[in-house]
Length: 180
Ligand SMILES: [Ca+2]
Ligand SMILES: [Ca+2]
Image (cartoon, rainbow, N blue to C red):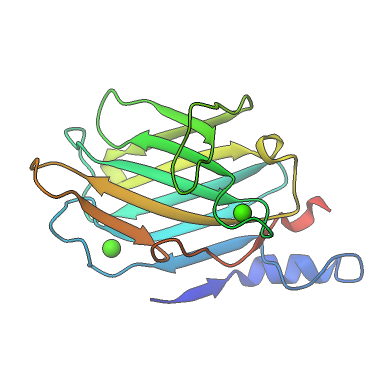
């Protein structure tokens, strides 16, 4: 497992160092081990990019197919003072599934849909799930953290679960780069 911060983001940030806290990067990337290999959708890695207008989250899997019965949740932390996520984007990974962004209820989604622009889709050919969430969804906060969970109940017995970076653990804070 490794964490890296984009050099391009760092050099961009140097332009606004005087005005912004330097601790944030706009790009976060982490690999995940083969720790859920009972599922084809064992997470192999996650990247998140916090741009001027959107938060883009990509989750990579061992093998993603239209027949997948698994689902994925992208948790977003917008308030570090309150434990747990504030927003959850939930989606299926198979054909014909839908996605929704809701307020979080602990580490779960809720019935409170967030009304803003976002989209999500599994890309079966490239084994990637891609979610794009407008910064309006979180009041254009300058920094967020991300955590991702996969649940696969394919064989009807005990579900296979995989987290990245780890269960109930966050990415580094991801700043919005040049949007300050
Ligand atoms: Ca994994
Ligand atoms: Ca929080």
